[in-house]
Image (tube, rainbow, N blue to C red; front, side, top):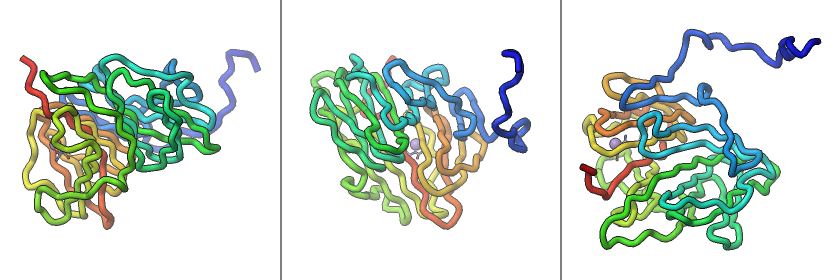
Length: 266
Ligand code: UGY
Ligand code: MN
């Protein structure tokens, strides 16, 4: 074999790979099934595959990723960024997070962490199994007389399920302290019984990064409906008309980023 020959085949292209794509990218929203999101790597991580879901090049004012950390992988050294907040949510496996030099603590699936700007952290996979972590970075928007929040390390099981809508079949878990004006974003677990949609199509200034965790449904973005299920990602820019209609037999749940608590920049 010369060095110009094709490497030996390791698999076949699946049917539909040429003409079928559930993914859509528009000026103020994007729908992304996982199979099309190619891998990247980052210099601050070793043995870690990074799948970038949202980035400014898409139109988003934040960045969101899935990190796939192999056993022994993760940050090479403590990492921090001035003015940038980090959020982590464990999708599968167990990861060890150290905040500001403190002893590392294990995070299981459903575990999450918020890090204010300029907070050094390490995120490492010290287990023998691969780990998947949803990560988000957002530039902090300071507001007069408000201090910067403290770090948070917790688990979704410790967060109460609420329902401010009063509508049957809805459930909300606000992973960050709801209504605390020091935070300029929310990360919310949104739960739905099958068939329970929003009371109206929403059109609002806030932006979203949506990662589907459980169940399935139909998502309205602009004027198009998309069938959505676990591991699909949606970016919704400001004023993107949106509605969710959960289908199937099981509850649906997604993790939703939303920028809040700050005035419009003019
Ligand atoms: O709070 C929200 O903006 C939420 N209802 N939007 C959404 O789930 N697309
Ligand atoms: Mn919304």
